Amino acid sequence: QVQLVESGGGLVQPGGSLRVSCAASGRIGSIVVTGWYRQAPGKQRELVASITTGGVTNYGDSVKGRFTISRDNAKNTVYLQMNSLKPEDTAVYYCNVRAAVVGGTVAYWGQGTQVTVSS
Image 1: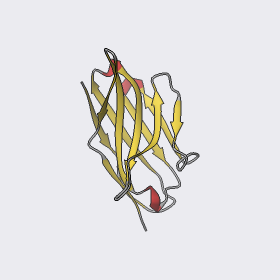
Image 2: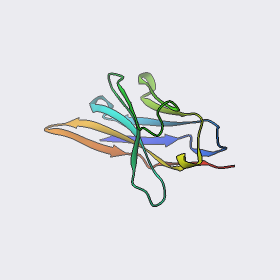
Image 3: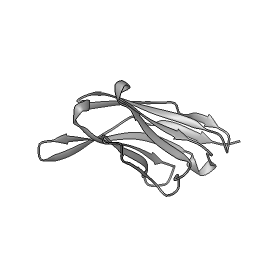
């Protein structure tokens, strides 16, 4: 199994920046890709950004150019740097990993961290 702990959420003004972190433990050697998703009230959960173990990144259209996903392998941590934040970025942000198992992959989720963008 893989355990995920998110941190770094909070309240920020429009135009501001925030960084959230996702620390993984357990069977981290099996992780194939790590991603950040978000879910706003009344909306479906959506992909924000993802990064593979090889460093290939992918971003949702709404955050391209503003958010950056990165990883620190020594700390088993993935970061999401969020710049030029907008009120519509307000959501609970969840860390997700897909880990290899026999026959496929399995997904693990963190508990979520609240990001609120408001003046």
